[in-house]
Image 1 (tube, rainbow, N blue to C red):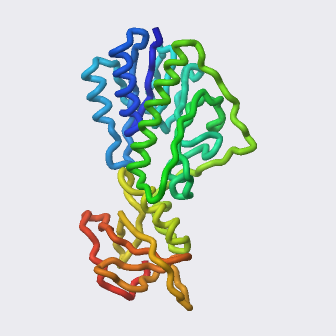
Image 2 (image 1 turned 180 degrees about the vertical axis):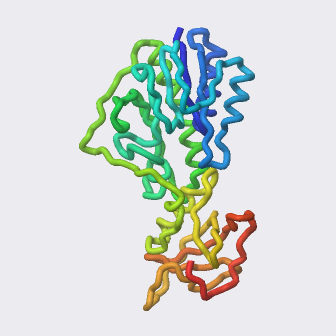
Length: 295
C-alpha cells in the first residue's frame, strides 16, 4: 500500500485532492493518510473551505497550516501542490509540483509570468524536494499549448487538470517502483521573481499587447491590474488592443479618445481600449467620461 500525504492550497490543491480521493476510494493499494491545507489572502477564493469539506466528508486527517505546524509523517510519499511555504521534515519523501516546464521559470508566480511574457506552452513539473531553488530532479512533466487571449482563471483551470493527471502518473509509478529522476539542465534555466501590490500597476510604456496579457494574467482570482485616476484606485478587468495612430508627441498613459465610455489609452506601442474596470473601494463599474486624464 502507498500511503499519501498532501500539502495543498488553491484550485490546483482541490483538483488534486479530488483525484486522490477517487483513487483511494477505488483502489485499496492507495491510502490518503493526511491533508495539510493553507489559506491564501492574496486570492479571492483560496479553496480552503472546499478542501476542508472534502476531508471531513471522507474522514481524512486534516491540518491547517500554521508557522508551528510539524507533522511526523507516516506517509510513503508526500506532495506539495499549490504550496508556497517551506516544509522542514521528511523532504526525502516530498514531491513538489511547480507551475512551469522546468528548468524554465523557477521561482515565484511562474504561470502569471508565462502568460505576461506570451509563452505558447504552459504546464507543471513534479520534482524531488531540494534545498536549492526549484533545482530538484524531475520525476514528471505535463504541458499543453495555449492561444491568446487567455485569462488567468482559464489557465489555472487548464493547469489544475494537468496537476491531477500528473499526480496520478507519479502515484502509479511509485506503486510500481518505476519512478525515475532526471537531472535538470542548468544551461536552459530561467527564473521568475515574486510579485507584490506594486507589480499590479499598469506600465503604459509597454506595448498594448503586453499590457492586455498582463491584465488577463492578473485578473480573477487575483485582484486585477490597476491604475490610479483622480486619486482613486481602479482595477482593470478587460481591455483590447487597438490599431495605432501616428501620434507626434506620444505620451504614454494619456487618454486619446473615449468610445462609448471606454477610454483608448496611448501605450508604448499601439493603443489600448479599457472595456471593463471597477473602483477598488466599492466594486462599482467605472464610467470614463473625462478626456484630459493621465492614467
